[in-house]
Length: 612
Ligand SMILES: [Zn+2]
Image 1 (tube, rainbow, N blue to C red):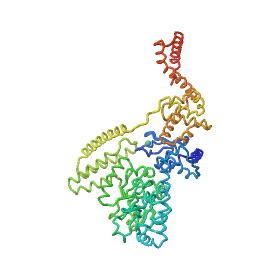
Image 2 (image 1 turned 90 degrees about the vertical axis):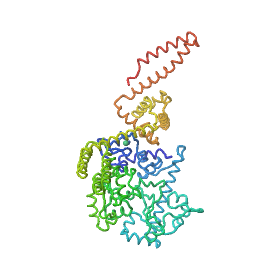
Image 3 (image 1 turned 180 degrees about the vertical axis):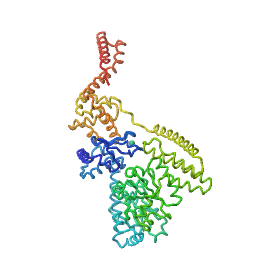
Image 4 (image 1 turned 120 degrees about the vertical axis):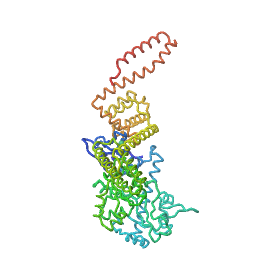
């Protein structure tokens, strides 16, 4: 639980435009900013950042909120973590209280995360010091030196060394960090027999894997060649932990981020040393995947920074297979992917050491785009027989069929030109009629469209949605957001007690609380006190609607609403009244009075229906 003053100070200190631009490429458009929405497959910037309201909203998928929910979603963290991160960013010291609203589970998780960050940083320091200064680190230094890694790189990437022992780190951690925490961080493993734990990394050069803020969250270890025989795995990574998600994280992104943002290019390599060597040679937009292929989960991160993605592949068959799956993925997302294969199947590390940075840059510039690459693969397969050739051609058509048709006009045309060109060349290369290829392509595209529609339907059926707000309840809060001073009239009218939706009931409780604290019931205060992202999203929707109707007279609208609700309230009593009149439970005078009253209400009801 945080003091609301702290949250308020954070809100004032952190501009949503600055925050969002650290993650997304923003284009200014009049008073607002636009970006590709990271939460749906966006091709035409639909996310709007509104500096005036300090809010964001996607007009396609409906995501919306403020700085807190933005960070929660981008970093996949809880509200308290987002508050802490933003406070750090703004240099604000937090006063935390353990109030009744503090949620036990998310608190525990964020405490565990804090402890894990501390432990990983500590471990990275231990390994690094061992490598750089300790006699025990000698084998590690010799190895990295032989691989051509300079001392400056060892510093920049905080490389380390773990001596060949079962308990080197365990002993150092004694009393400072519990074995449970060491295990949670993936630094040790449980012994198979008996109690206790042992070091996961033994006799390895270590590459700390750091998050976007440069904090170590996991480790990758390369076994030294002299210990190779006893330890079969050349490279091992930390297992996945609370901090570390292998298929989302990119090695080196913390170091490469600035350069990627400047060049709009990212070079994705397959190993730590490739990435590190690229930086050592001044190719500073390089990152590495972590023992997996590039996956769909990496795309939002990459897309936030770069326009062109260069994937460096080694030439083996596995790499080729992976690349074909990837092509499909990138083409379906309409991202500019280029495939870089180095001469003689060298990996980037070897190539850079042999030929230098300029030669490497030339290779990068000449890298074919994804479609071109697949065409070349297909054309090469011709020599492998009819079956292989047909399969390759069909794969090429499948990939072509993946490109979405509904993208923005300009990229569509460029893509269609590319498609036509590839089809013509394929027709020539495989000696086939271009029209036949086109026919097959449009069949594939149709099938795909049908499958997609079926899938979308299933998804929307499965999604359990919060029921929509009743119209008048929505309208009421739009009015309060438009004109916060109306809150007194609303309170007077008793409308707050008639709300039926859990969200609006919550908002009303908040109103009463703010009134009792003598605070404004305006949009930013509402956002500040609503911690859950779904609530923030609804508030942004309400605020957007409110702004669109701001030319209407808010006071008159409220009065109309109050009258309307009164009528509804009375008319809902009619059936009961009519029943008692009919059943003669009342004396004559009472019955007459009631009938007259009902008649009067009915007249005024028809007369006074609000105009909206
Ligand atoms: Zn969206």
